[in-house]
Amino acid sequence: MSNVAKVPKSPSSEACSPTSTSMADMVGHLYADLSLSRKILLVATTFTSYMLFALAWNWGDMYVTSLGFSASRTAVMTNAITLAQVVGSLVAANVIVRMGIRNSYALAGALIVFGGLVSLTQAFPLVFFIRFVMGLGGALMVVMGSAIAAKVLTGRDLQIANGIGSVAFNTGLAVAMTFGGMVVGRPIIGVLIAASLSLILLIAWWIVSRMVLRPEPAQEVAQDTSFTMKDGFKEWFNWVFALAYTGLLSYYIVAFTFMDPSTIRWVVYAGIVGALSGTVVSAKTDNATKPLVVVWCALAQVIAAAAVLAMSGHRLEVLIGVILGFVIFFPMPFFVQTAFIRPGVTPRQIAVTFSIFWAVSYAGSVVIIMIFAAIADATGGLVAGTNIPVSVAPMIFIVFAEATFLIGTFLIWRWFKKQNALAVAS
Image 1 (cartoon, helix red, strand yellow):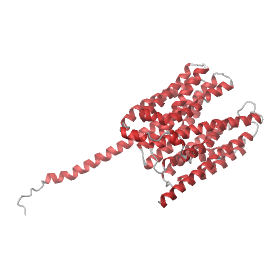
Image 2 (tube, rainbow, N blue to C red):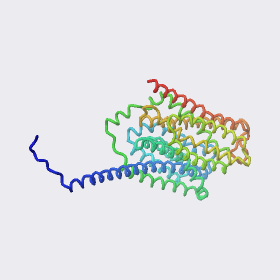
Image 3 (tube, helix red, strand yellow):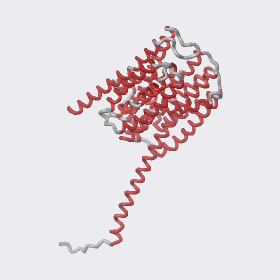
Image 4 (tube, helix red, strand yellow):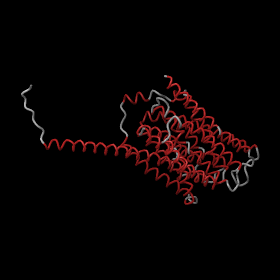
């Protein structure tokens, strides 16, 4: 037995020990809560920034229309942003690699602010150029929004962020349509307001992102760049994911043409409610069920789209429009989440997926809308003084185009079932 005397602990040291531990726990919890709050603030900043892009796009269209150009030139300038969305989506993933997420998103915000310069000119080439540049900013922003959420959030927080993010553009449209009457007589004011608000959000991003995002280790960056756009285009999921959305996007864009403005306003409002509801439900739904929910909602979309066509001019048209808006946007949080729940997916792969997603869907929608317009011209043109086709043929075509969302999501559901079966077998 050792003769070394054991020194008893002082009562004060025993009393302080639990207190110190509790204090450490409290500080740790406080730091964790503060860290999560900053991450949520970061994602809220990206949501609001993209919402303002939709506002700038819509009010910019009002300004372009007020310039009195020919219909063809007006269409070209209006479509400048759509064309930029295709180009910007294709290069977004590589821009992130070269500049990093923080600087890339700041660049996107700056390009959108640049769009405010359109208020200083009425020259056709300059208007087209400025609108195109602003469209590039929006394309970069929407692709990076998903990558940023995946970088800073996980689990249910990520699902909620993605769900809310899916309604950012629609929220911007709702704001633009709700307050558009205040600037319709002076569209320049609307353009300047949208640009000024975007500048404020750009400054907010620069401050908040500095608190949350940290420089990536060189080894992590090198590993992250190994998955290229070329690799992404080789993946079956990316093609089906993008092409499925193409038909739905085309229908939604055309809806602004052939539906009554008061009806489409309710479609937009119902879409916001649908997306937020879908976000809540999606967060409580297991991953295996998510693809199936999208399939059933896609079927409801086709039925509602056909009903809107059949009920055009009927007193129930607004009600059908509300149902349409809800079923279009309710599954979006589920649909977006399917890109995140793929086995072994990385943030870099997610960035590439959404680059391809937006590029293919916007490019495809341009083609579908051109076919829609060609069918309308070939079957009697438009009703005098409106944008509504004389014939029902182009509207039937766009409903069939919308049905590709049902086909694509069904294939994705089958793909996930196969992946799950392979995981169980292994």
